[in-house]
Length: 145
Image (tube, rainbow, N blue to C red; front, top):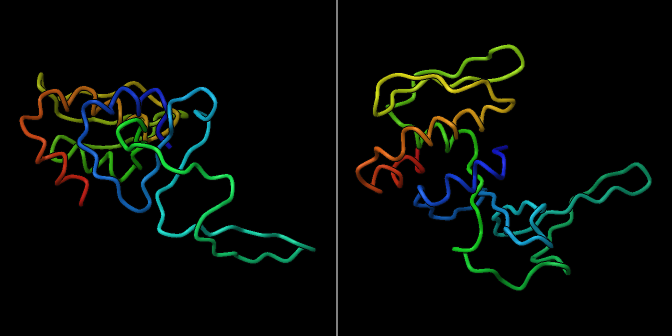
């Protein structure tokens, strides 16, 4: 999962249309450690006496009533980040205990520093590539891949 810091740095550069399965956090101190997933229905795992069962709930009791989508920070998944890189993406490689993304940026090909999570390596590459993106249409198109 992408780090909160990198998600916050990418947020102003991305044109996000929320969809089921997307994750976000709310950058307010009292709730900033929680990650939320957009879903039409909440499925809760209940384990009792060694048996597990899924409960399907329309909502959960402790849930927030609502929050404006422009105050949350989207946490794109690995495949979304790769899609946002589009044709600039060259490769993802494992280096030691981390991941390195090779991509083409405004100044030519480059490699990210090794990151512990592939999502963070993709995000670092996007921070180089996205300022050169001429239109938000490319961003929206990449999200549907």
